[in-house]
Image (cartoon, rainbow, N blue to C red; front, side, top):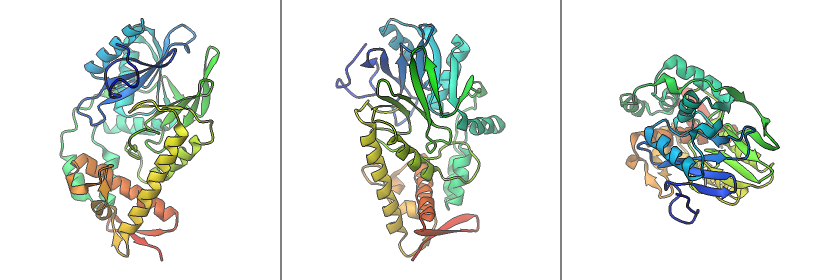
Length: 346
Protein backbone atom coordinates (compact mmCIF):
# COMPACT_ATOMS: atom_id res chain seq x y z
CA UNK A 1 0.00 0.00 0.00
CA UNK A 2 1.35 3.45 -0.93
CA UNK A 3 0.34 6.27 1.40
CA UNK A 4 0.87 10.01 1.63
CA UNK A 5 2.83 11.62 4.47
CA UNK A 6 -0.32 13.18 5.91
CA UNK A 7 -2.24 9.92 6.15
CA UNK A 8 -1.50 8.60 9.61
CA UNK A 9 1.55 8.17 11.83
CA UNK A 10 5.01 7.90 10.33
CA UNK A 11 5.52 4.30 11.52
CA UNK A 12 2.45 2.95 9.69
CA UNK A 13 3.26 0.14 7.26
CA UNK A 14 3.52 0.95 3.59
CA UNK A 15 5.57 2.83 1.01
CA UNK A 16 5.73 6.60 1.10
CA UNK A 17 7.20 8.20 -2.00
CA UNK A 18 9.33 11.23 -1.12
CA UNK A 19 9.78 12.08 -4.80
CA UNK A 20 9.91 9.94 -7.93
CA UNK A 21 12.40 7.13 -7.41
CA UNK A 22 12.88 7.79 -3.67
CA UNK A 23 10.71 5.83 -1.25
CA UNK A 24 10.52 5.74 2.57
CA UNK A 25 9.65 2.36 4.11
CA UNK A 26 9.15 2.03 7.91
CA UNK A 27 10.18 -1.42 9.14
CA UNK A 28 8.97 -2.74 12.52
CA UNK A 29 11.21 -3.09 15.57
CA UNK A 30 10.77 -5.69 18.34
CA UNK A 31 9.67 -4.29 21.71
CA UNK A 32 11.13 -0.88 20.95
CA UNK A 33 9.74 2.50 21.96
CA UNK A 34 10.74 3.88 18.56
CA UNK A 35 8.21 1.53 16.88
CA UNK A 36 9.94 1.48 13.48
CA UNK A 37 13.07 2.35 11.55
CA UNK A 38 12.92 4.02 8.14
CA UNK A 39 14.84 2.53 5.26
CA UNK A 40 14.96 4.33 1.94
CA UNK A 41 14.75 2.74 -1.49
CA UNK A 42 16.50 4.67 -4.27
CA UNK A 43 15.50 3.27 -7.64
CA UNK A 44 17.58 5.42 -9.98
CA UNK A 45 21.11 5.14 -8.58
CA UNK A 46 22.52 1.67 -9.22
CA UNK A 47 24.19 1.21 -12.62
CA UNK A 48 22.67 -2.25 -13.02
CA UNK A 49 19.08 -1.06 -12.62
CA UNK A 50 18.98 -2.31 -9.05
CA UNK A 51 17.99 -0.45 -5.91
CA UNK A 52 20.30 1.30 -3.46
CA UNK A 53 18.84 0.99 0.03
CA UNK A 54 19.85 3.29 2.86
CA UNK A 55 19.89 1.47 6.20
CA UNK A 56 18.92 -2.15 6.55
CA UNK A 57 16.54 -2.58 9.47
CA UNK A 58 16.57 -5.12 12.29
CA UNK A 59 17.01 -8.77 11.26
CA UNK A 60 13.60 -10.08 12.31
CA UNK A 61 11.02 -11.89 10.12
CA UNK A 62 8.49 -9.06 10.46
CA UNK A 63 10.97 -6.55 9.01
CA UNK A 64 11.81 -8.84 6.08
CA UNK A 65 8.12 -9.31 5.32
CA UNK A 66 7.43 -5.57 5.46
CA UNK A 67 10.36 -4.88 3.15
CA UNK A 68 9.19 -7.52 0.65
CA UNK A 69 5.68 -6.05 0.63
CA UNK A 70 7.05 -2.53 0.11
CA UNK A 71 9.20 -3.63 -2.80
CA UNK A 72 6.25 -5.43 -4.36
CA UNK A 73 4.18 -2.24 -4.07
CA UNK A 74 6.65 -0.42 -6.34
CA UNK A 75 6.95 -3.35 -8.75
CA UNK A 76 10.29 -4.65 -7.44
CA UNK A 77 11.55 -7.53 -5.26
CA UNK A 78 14.37 -8.37 -2.87
CA UNK A 79 16.62 -9.42 -5.72
CA UNK A 80 16.74 -5.80 -6.91
CA UNK A 81 18.65 -4.66 -3.78
CA UNK A 82 22.18 -4.19 -5.10
CA UNK A 83 23.73 -1.89 -2.47
CA UNK A 84 22.86 -1.24 1.19
CA UNK A 85 24.39 1.91 2.67
CA UNK A 86 24.23 1.84 6.47
CA UNK A 87 24.42 4.98 8.60
CA UNK A 88 25.72 3.24 11.73
CA UNK A 89 26.21 -0.08 13.44
CA UNK A 90 23.20 -0.25 15.77
CA UNK A 91 21.22 -3.44 15.26
CA UNK A 92 18.08 -1.69 13.97
CA UNK A 93 20.16 -0.32 11.08
CA UNK A 94 22.81 -2.94 10.38
CA UNK A 95 21.76 -6.49 11.13
CA UNK A 96 19.22 -7.01 8.34
CA UNK A 97 21.71 -5.54 5.86
CA UNK A 98 24.11 -8.37 6.70
CA UNK A 99 21.33 -10.94 6.44
CA UNK A 100 20.22 -9.60 3.04
CA UNK A 101 23.79 -9.72 1.77
CA UNK A 102 23.97 -13.38 2.73
CA UNK A 103 20.70 -14.04 0.91
CA UNK A 104 21.11 -11.82 -2.15
CA UNK A 105 24.76 -10.90 -2.52
CA UNK A 106 24.02 -7.19 -1.97
CA UNK A 107 27.04 -5.02 -1.16
CA UNK A 108 27.01 -3.49 2.34
CA UNK A 109 28.75 -0.17 3.11
CA UNK A 110 29.44 1.18 6.62
CA UNK A 111 31.37 4.12 8.08
CA UNK A 112 35.03 3.37 8.84
CA UNK A 113 34.65 4.76 12.35
CA UNK A 114 32.51 1.75 13.26
CA UNK A 115 35.36 -0.72 12.69
CA UNK A 116 36.73 -0.63 16.30
CA UNK A 117 33.26 -1.22 17.75
CA UNK A 118 32.60 -4.11 15.39
CA UNK A 119 35.97 -5.65 16.23
CA UNK A 120 35.29 -5.23 19.97
CA UNK A 121 31.90 -6.88 19.51
CA UNK A 122 33.63 -9.84 17.87
CA UNK A 123 36.04 -10.11 20.82
CA UNK A 124 33.42 -9.78 23.56
CA UNK A 125 30.72 -11.78 21.75
CA UNK A 126 28.00 -10.35 23.95
CA UNK A 127 24.92 -8.15 23.53
CA UNK A 128 25.52 -6.58 26.94
CA UNK A 129 26.14 -2.78 26.60
CA UNK A 130 29.60 -3.13 28.11
CA UNK A 131 31.00 0.32 27.35
CA UNK A 132 27.83 2.08 28.48
CA UNK A 133 27.90 0.15 31.75
CA UNK A 134 31.51 1.20 32.33
CA UNK A 135 30.51 4.82 31.75
CA UNK A 136 27.57 4.33 34.11
CA UNK A 137 29.86 3.04 36.86
CA UNK A 138 32.24 5.98 36.45
CA UNK A 139 29.18 8.24 36.71
CA UNK A 140 28.42 6.93 40.22
CA UNK A 141 25.63 4.52 39.26
CA UNK A 142 27.32 1.21 40.01
CA UNK A 143 24.18 -0.30 41.51
CA UNK A 144 22.18 0.53 38.38
CA UNK A 145 24.95 -0.92 36.23
CA UNK A 146 24.74 -4.13 38.22
CA UNK A 147 20.99 -4.38 37.70
CA UNK A 148 21.31 -3.88 33.96
CA UNK A 149 24.19 -6.34 33.76
CA UNK A 150 21.97 -8.97 35.41
CA UNK A 151 19.21 -8.57 32.81
CA UNK A 152 18.66 -10.96 29.93
CA UNK A 153 20.16 -9.19 26.92
CA UNK A 154 19.23 -11.95 24.49
CA UNK A 155 21.49 -14.47 22.86
CA UNK A 156 24.45 -13.11 20.92
CA UNK A 157 24.20 -13.96 17.22
CA UNK A 158 27.61 -13.48 15.57
CA UNK A 159 26.18 -14.06 12.09
CA UNK A 160 24.58 -10.59 11.95
CA UNK A 161 27.75 -8.75 12.96
CA UNK A 162 29.96 -9.46 9.97
CA UNK A 163 32.20 -6.77 8.47
CA UNK A 164 30.82 -4.72 5.54
CA UNK A 165 32.04 -5.07 1.97
CA UNK A 166 33.39 -1.54 2.10
CA UNK A 167 34.36 0.90 4.84
CA UNK A 168 33.35 4.47 4.06
CA UNK A 169 35.36 7.63 4.67
CA UNK A 170 34.43 11.23 3.86
CA UNK A 171 33.95 10.66 0.15
CA UNK A 172 31.52 10.79 -2.73
CA UNK A 173 29.81 7.64 -3.96
CA UNK A 174 28.94 7.65 -7.65
CA UNK A 175 26.08 5.65 -9.10
CA UNK A 176 25.74 6.28 -12.82
CA UNK A 177 25.29 10.03 -13.25
CA UNK A 178 24.21 10.56 -9.62
CA UNK A 179 26.25 11.11 -6.50
CA UNK A 180 25.84 10.66 -2.75
CA UNK A 181 28.20 12.54 -0.46
CA UNK A 182 29.27 10.54 2.61
CA UNK A 183 29.60 12.87 5.61
CA UNK A 184 31.03 11.39 8.85
CA UNK A 185 28.95 12.62 11.81
CA UNK A 186 30.40 11.11 15.02
CA UNK A 187 28.36 11.48 18.19
CA UNK A 188 25.47 9.02 18.24
CA UNK A 189 28.20 6.49 17.45
CA UNK A 190 31.83 7.16 16.55
CA UNK A 191 31.38 5.97 12.98
CA UNK A 192 27.95 7.39 12.17
CA UNK A 193 27.66 8.80 8.64
CA UNK A 194 24.92 10.60 6.75
CA UNK A 195 24.31 10.50 3.01
CA UNK A 196 23.71 13.79 1.22
CA UNK A 197 22.13 13.91 -2.22
CA UNK A 198 23.07 17.46 -3.16
CA UNK A 199 21.52 17.25 -6.63
CA UNK A 200 18.05 16.58 -5.21
CA UNK A 201 18.46 18.38 -1.89
CA UNK A 202 17.93 15.28 0.28
CA UNK A 203 19.73 14.33 3.50
CA UNK A 204 19.48 10.70 4.64
CA UNK A 205 20.32 11.47 8.26
CA UNK A 206 20.14 8.13 10.05
CA UNK A 207 19.98 8.86 13.79
CA UNK A 208 22.11 12.00 13.57
CA UNK A 209 19.25 14.45 13.01
CA UNK A 210 15.82 13.20 14.11
CA UNK A 211 12.65 15.29 13.79
CA UNK A 212 10.94 14.57 17.12
CA UNK A 213 13.57 13.24 19.53
CA UNK A 214 17.20 13.77 20.42
CA UNK A 215 19.36 10.70 19.76
CA UNK A 216 21.28 8.98 22.54
CA UNK A 217 24.95 9.90 22.54
CA UNK A 218 27.79 7.39 22.51
CA UNK A 219 25.64 4.27 22.99
CA UNK A 220 28.06 1.79 21.47
CA UNK A 221 31.00 -0.47 22.17
CA UNK A 222 34.11 1.69 22.39
CA UNK A 223 37.21 2.30 24.42
CA UNK A 224 36.74 4.38 27.61
CA UNK A 225 36.97 8.12 27.31
CA UNK A 226 36.22 10.25 24.30
CA UNK A 227 33.86 13.21 24.02
CA UNK A 228 30.68 11.93 22.38
CA UNK A 229 28.47 14.96 23.05
CA UNK A 230 31.13 17.46 21.98
CA UNK A 231 31.60 15.41 18.81
CA UNK A 232 27.84 15.30 18.27
CA UNK A 233 27.47 19.07 18.62
CA UNK A 234 30.32 19.58 16.16
CA UNK A 235 28.61 17.15 13.76
CA UNK A 236 25.34 19.07 14.07
CA UNK A 237 27.08 22.36 13.23
CA UNK A 238 28.70 20.64 10.27
CA UNK A 239 25.27 20.23 8.68
CA UNK A 240 25.01 24.01 8.34
CA UNK A 241 28.05 24.07 6.03
CA UNK A 242 25.95 22.41 3.34
CA UNK A 243 22.95 23.84 1.56
CA UNK A 244 19.72 23.14 3.40
CA UNK A 245 18.06 19.87 2.41
CA UNK A 246 14.92 17.91 3.12
CA UNK A 247 15.42 15.76 6.20
CA UNK A 248 14.93 12.01 5.64
CA UNK A 249 15.52 10.53 9.11
CA UNK A 250 15.72 6.97 10.40
CA UNK A 251 12.91 7.54 12.92
CA UNK A 252 10.06 9.95 12.27
CA UNK A 253 8.52 11.63 9.24
CA UNK A 254 10.28 13.47 6.45
CA UNK A 255 10.51 17.23 7.05
CA UNK A 256 11.39 20.16 4.83
CA UNK A 257 14.49 21.63 6.49
CA UNK A 258 17.54 20.00 8.03
CA UNK A 259 18.85 23.40 9.15
CA UNK A 260 15.68 24.16 11.10
CA UNK A 261 15.90 20.91 13.03
CA UNK A 262 19.64 21.31 13.62
CA UNK A 263 18.97 24.71 15.19
CA UNK A 264 16.35 23.14 17.47
CA UNK A 265 18.71 20.36 18.55
CA UNK A 266 21.53 22.79 19.28
CA UNK A 267 19.14 24.92 21.33
CA UNK A 268 17.98 21.82 23.20
CA UNK A 269 21.51 20.90 24.18
CA UNK A 270 22.28 24.49 25.19
CA UNK A 271 19.26 24.25 27.51
CA UNK A 272 20.40 20.89 28.93
CA UNK A 273 23.89 22.29 29.54
CA UNK A 274 22.37 25.24 31.42
CA UNK A 275 20.06 22.98 33.43
CA UNK A 276 22.92 20.63 34.29
CA UNK A 277 25.01 23.56 35.52
CA UNK A 278 22.15 24.96 37.57
CA UNK A 279 21.39 21.54 39.05
CA UNK A 280 25.03 21.06 40.01
CA UNK A 281 24.83 24.35 41.90
CA UNK A 282 27.43 24.81 44.62
CA UNK A 283 27.79 21.09 45.32
CA UNK A 284 30.30 18.50 44.19
CA UNK A 285 28.28 15.73 42.58
CA UNK A 286 28.59 12.77 40.25
CA UNK A 287 26.53 12.52 37.07
CA UNK A 288 24.10 10.04 38.65
CA UNK A 289 23.22 12.55 41.36
CA UNK A 290 22.69 15.33 38.82
CA UNK A 291 20.58 13.09 36.56
CA UNK A 292 18.27 12.20 39.44
CA UNK A 293 17.42 15.88 39.86
CA UNK A 294 16.66 16.57 36.19
CA UNK A 295 13.45 15.98 34.25
CA UNK A 296 13.50 13.60 31.28
CA UNK A 297 11.73 13.50 27.91
CA UNK A 298 9.57 16.35 26.66
CA UNK A 299 7.19 15.66 29.54
CA UNK A 300 9.91 16.23 32.18
CA UNK A 301 9.41 12.73 33.62
CA UNK A 302 11.12 12.14 36.96
CA UNK A 303 14.25 9.99 36.83
CA UNK A 304 12.69 7.35 39.10
CA UNK A 305 9.85 6.80 36.62
CA UNK A 306 12.22 5.75 33.82
CA UNK A 307 13.00 2.11 33.05
CA UNK A 308 16.44 0.88 34.10
CA UNK A 309 17.65 1.02 30.49
CA UNK A 310 16.45 4.61 30.06
CA UNK A 311 17.95 5.53 33.42
CA UNK A 312 21.28 4.32 32.04
CA UNK A 313 20.86 6.53 28.96
CA UNK A 314 19.88 9.47 31.19
CA UNK A 315 22.89 9.13 33.49
CA UNK A 316 25.31 8.73 30.61
CA UNK A 317 23.80 11.71 28.78
CA UNK A 318 24.17 13.78 31.94
CA UNK A 319 27.82 12.74 32.20
CA UNK A 320 28.30 13.80 28.58
CA UNK A 321 26.79 17.24 29.28
CA UNK A 322 28.93 17.68 32.36
CA UNK A 323 32.02 16.72 30.35
CA UNK A 324 31.17 19.42 27.78
CA UNK A 325 30.89 21.92 30.65
CA UNK A 326 34.37 20.82 31.70
CA UNK A 327 35.65 21.45 28.16
CA UNK A 328 34.04 24.90 28.31
CA UNK A 329 35.82 25.66 31.57
CA UNK A 330 32.60 26.09 33.54
CA UNK A 331 32.98 22.89 35.58
CA UNK A 332 35.97 21.00 36.95
CA UNK A 333 36.18 17.23 37.33
CA UNK A 334 38.11 14.92 39.61
CA UNK A 335 38.27 11.12 39.49
CA UNK A 336 37.72 9.96 43.09
CA UNK A 337 37.28 6.33 44.06
CA UNK A 338 36.54 5.32 40.47
CA UNK A 339 33.84 7.98 40.05
CA UNK A 340 33.94 11.35 38.30
CA UNK A 341 33.01 14.18 40.66
CA UNK A 342 32.03 17.56 39.19
CA UNK A 343 32.30 21.03 40.75
CA UNK A 344 31.20 24.36 39.32
CA UNK A 345 34.08 26.73 38.57
CA UNK A 346 33.83 30.15 40.19
